[in-house]
Image (tube, rainbow, N blue to C red; front, side, top):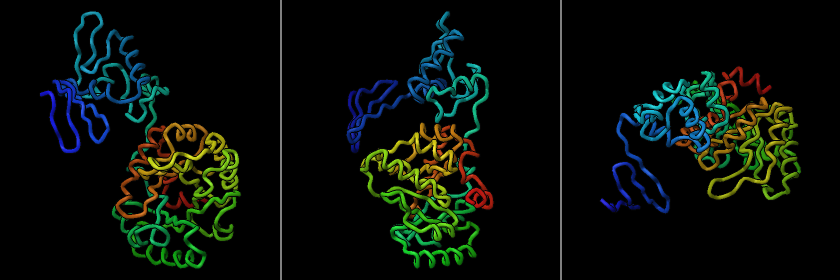
Length: 351
């Protein structure tokens, strides 16, 4: 079969091992393999080029050549096949390296000594720390959010509507509404805000208001084209405020629509370590902000991370899985994320 037309694309170059699929301008290679060879086929399709080169080096030291079909004995040419990745790693004398870590950043050496970290799991989360409602630009009520939290088994969800859209009178009414909703649900809503970091580094609410909230996210939403040093100093100034708990979507990017703004993340991470401010891992598919490499840098500096969906409607709560994937790519353990804390622990951390 040389060509197969499909809805929205075409399959070309078909042979018994691989299919190349063109779909809406994107190229996808689909590899077929026997079940007995699945382990190395999957392994060779996962991870960076540097990781695979390092893993091939481990195999070579043991007298084997790593190929998608299996491990080839360099002396005899005999092929050793594996039905799972775990079998390959075990054969090489290694712990199984999670896919998120396969970047050749020291994970191979740790796997050889069976000292890989225990990465955070989705089940470790106690709640979501970034949610919008109809009080600002969301499409879900407080009741909707609490019910969604109950369904997911959460202890808490932080209501963090935009300060630019919620005046102080409305904020007071929202807090009263949160108290009423909490009486009816196991998942407790936290009275929070996503407060704007203005162009001069000041915040969209006065300190007396921020002090009365359960959680404060500070985010840049305007002046995105400022000089990099000025933009960075805005965020550093916000972190100096004792009431700011988290810096939201730290690079401000919108995938496919807007690149990251010119912020010096190294300075932000260093200062977050000084002030004790957490950095958000924004799990929205439109943002996925921060990237794994910056999460790892933050973790190594002792900076806490906070996963949040930035959900504007109930169906978006499941996006938290993307945040956990990013956290795992940044080598995060349970203790590195503040929303793995229980509600009393979270409120104590916030204070």
